[in-house]
Amino acid sequence: MQEDKKELEVDEALDARQRMAKKMAMKKNKAKIKIGKKKAMKRAANPEKLKKMAMKKARDVIAKKLVKGKDKKDMGMSGKRSLEKKLDKKKSAIKKLAKKLMPKVKKANRDKVRANKGK
Image (cartoon, rainbow, N blue to C red; front, side, top):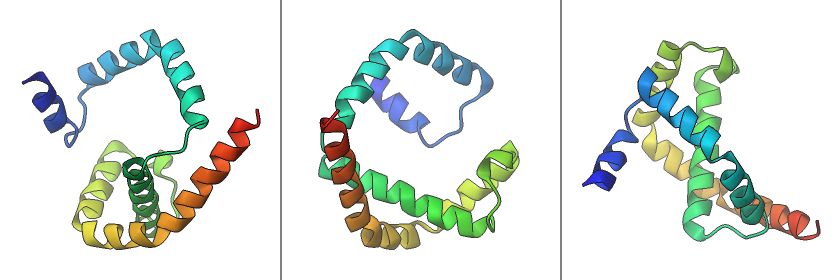
């Protein structure tokens, strides 16, 4: 039941209280997160993770086109929300672009792993 509720919350924006709770949790677990990131940098991503990375990259590319080069950081919350709504309508275009970007994402991941294994 608890996990189902968390899955539903992913689609919705966080309110102020939820954001503060998340901030405190991240602060509390920052050492564990740092160690996990270090380990993950040395491992190749699984196909599901690669697909997610390609989707994110595709979303970013289309978002950049929609905002005409403006930086997302400079936008207000309402601007970001409207951008997200526009992106949700372009899911099929995002999927197609993600499929095209997959080889680049795989290569970048391979290069990242190689670089980090040498350290």
